[in-house]
Amino acid sequence: QVQLVESGGGLVQAGGSLRLSCAASGIIFSNNRMGWYRQAPGKQRELVATISRSGNTDYAESVKGRFTIARDNAKNTVTLQMNSLKIEDTAVYYCNAYAYPFDFWGQGTQVTVSS
Image (cartoon, rainbow, N blue to C red; front, side, top):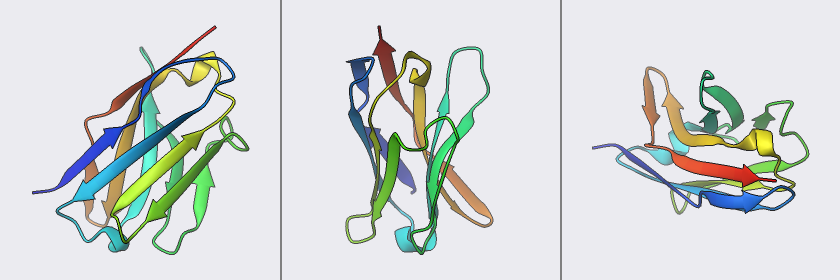
């Protein structure tokens, strides 16, 4: 049974930081591209950041320079360090594991940035 369990969300003031974690089980973690996506109210889910099996990273333009994705294959975890948070970063953040043809999602963690 595949499980992706996110943690670390919460309420933070604009300009602050949060660190999200995703613990994966039931998959061969190192074989998966891992990613973080987010969905704000009334909007479609969008890519935030991905990290490939080899460690190559990709970021949405809106978070470049502020967010950092990292993976630890020994611990089966992927993290998202979020700095200089903005109100528009408010969303539910989802962890994703992708290895064709499989695509798994976590349940999401709420991030709320206040003024």
